[in-house]
Image (cartoon, rainbow, N blue to C red; front, side, top):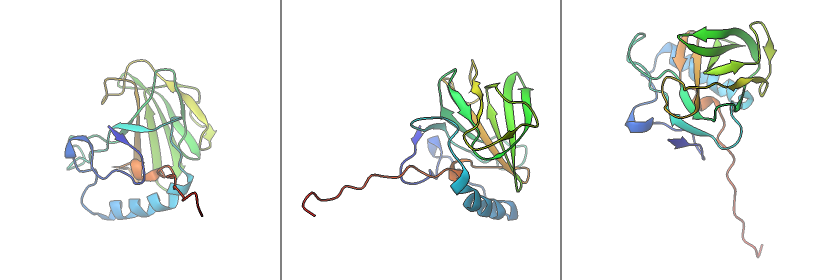
Length: 175
């Protein structure tokens, strides 16, 4: 489990690398992350725990974890991470999925979600997409929402899109 503190994680559970080799897509994705970071918010309320981190596949059809799993309880409200338009809301492989196009080549997907939105609906960051559905995402046994992000069609690590929480700073009492 990864809890967000001062910096985004660089390795997934089990020591797996969370980034692939540099490529034109990953270089452009890094630029997109920097531009989008100020506008993205967590899809869950309260403390954020990543129970399974991104694990880039070695090739397009290779094994990997194409997103992050964020701890959440069944029935918990799931919100849009950024402004966009819902481009899909329905079942995929037995799970209910919502996909949002954020423009600029960025698309996010959330599952398993009991949808509160339909395809074509505009959403803003924090807009309720639905609630966490029964069962579980493919990659976690307990309650979690799976969040995948694609940039120009390629899956990228969602974690860097979110600002870590601000840390408290202790000051001396005697000025």
